[in-house]
Length: 164
Ligand SMILES: [Mg+2]
Image (cartoon, rainbow, N blue to C red):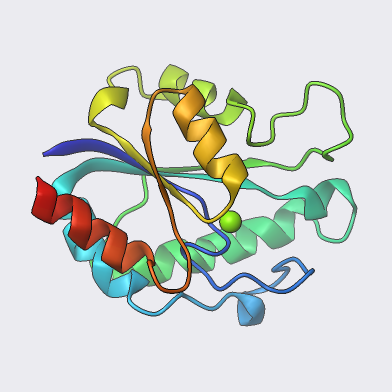
């Protein structure tokens, strides 16, 4: 059994929008295969934690309430598919803010470790579609996997389970 699967959100769980933020449920479209993958994810990982930059809030394009609505929808769809998310950490800071909590920084991961002290980073993975996800994961010593349209969450998961 692995320990924790850290997931970026946009481009990993849901389709990333070009130069726009997902501000409401109708803009939140699950990437193909993600919902069905949660059966395997929760079978092989003790917990699943989402770590997501959401600068749209800092830019006042969307509110925390709008983000919560999107996340409640995402969680309910995942739970309806038999999956589970343990916690979502989001950073609403602007990239220009000094000492912000955004990836490639590690503040959201550090918060997760405070909240879940039993996390074993050596047995954990980070999946993300941006270099900042990989850099942040590697700073924490977490094996980090770059996701794209071809090598998506479903294929990345299959690969690590098979190797295991
Ligand atoms: Mg992303």
